[in-house]
Length: 182
Image 1 (cartoon, helix red, strand yellow):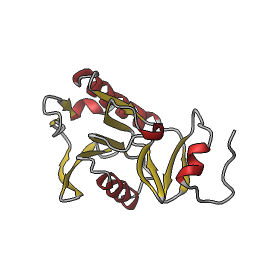
Image 2 (tube, helix red, strand yellow):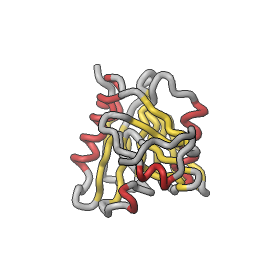
Image 3 (cartoon, rainbow, N blue to C red):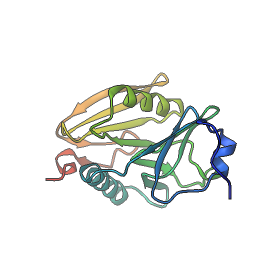
Image 4 (cartoon, rainbow, N blue to C red):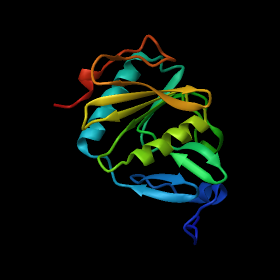
């Protein structure tokens, strides 16, 4: 079994040799492993509802709908790997077991998450040409919709009500009022 690296930074090759940890949520930003605590109830319930709706409305023979604890590689050098709360992906199995693109990424914000942290995630998703990202704000009961335009994810809407329709999947409809646990 491979051991953890001796420095605070990890290379892609070292990271591939590390053991998987079942319950840990970790992202890697510029080679630094960032451990995150488990999601709190509201976070998990919001993600669960959106995931259920996507799974119900998308053709599962064409797309994977994954929630937390999977790797979405942004870059190998320096290693950056994100763990979106939800992603819609192609069914093809990825290189080295990690995905490198998504049709839609959804981030449910934690109360401690800063705008700077969110902006960095958006830059990372733009790097791999993710066409659409939803940033969910449970405390404000709002959804920011970002669309990829000219290599950057630009905010196209902030919604407090109405229907979410992913651009790549216009037949999918998610009622924003239903997202929030009571």
